[in-house]
Amino acid sequence: MESGRLQKTRVSVFYSSKTGNTKKVAQAIAEEMGVDAIEAAAIGTGYNLKKTDLIFVGSGNYKSAPANEMVEFLETLVPAEDRYAVVFGTAGGNSRLHMGKMKKLLEEKGVKVLGEWCCPGQEYELKHKGRPDSRDLEEARKFAKKELKKIEVL
Image 1 (cartoon, rainbow, N blue to C red):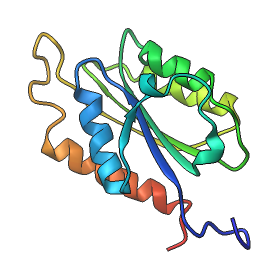
Image 2 (cartoon, rainbow, N blue to C red; image 1 turned 90 degrees about the horizontal axis):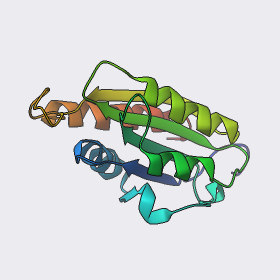
Image 3 (cartoon, one colour; image 1 turned 60 degrees about the vertical axis):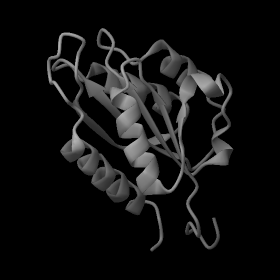
C-alpha cells in the first residue's frame, strides 16, 4: 500500500471441488481476475496471506461443510494484516452452511470477508442438471469484479 491506497491488487483464487462444479466457478472467477485457479489441496498447509491482498476461496457443500481440504487450507493460513477474502461455492441442496464455515475460518485469521456467492451445482443424482451453467459462471464473474472494486483503486 502506498498513501493508504492499493496501487495494484494481488488476487488469488483457491478452491476444493470433488465433482468439478466449484472448479468451474473458480476458473470463471480466476479468468475474470487474470490469475489461475488453484486447488487448495495442491497448496497444502501454511499459505502466507502476505502474498495476496484479496483471496477468493470456494468449496462445494459436503454435509453442510466445506471440503476437508479447504478446511485444512483455511485453518493453516498464515495471517497478515489488511487482507480481504470472498467466499464462493456450489451446493446441490438448499444448505449454504458451508459458506458460513469458510467465512468463520477466515475471520478467525483476521481476514475481512467482503462477500459470498453460491449457485446450484449438479448432484450425483442429477439434481440441478447442467449447473453451474453459463449464466451461473457469468454471474460469478460479475460478482468477482464487484468484490474487487471494493478494495481496488481504479
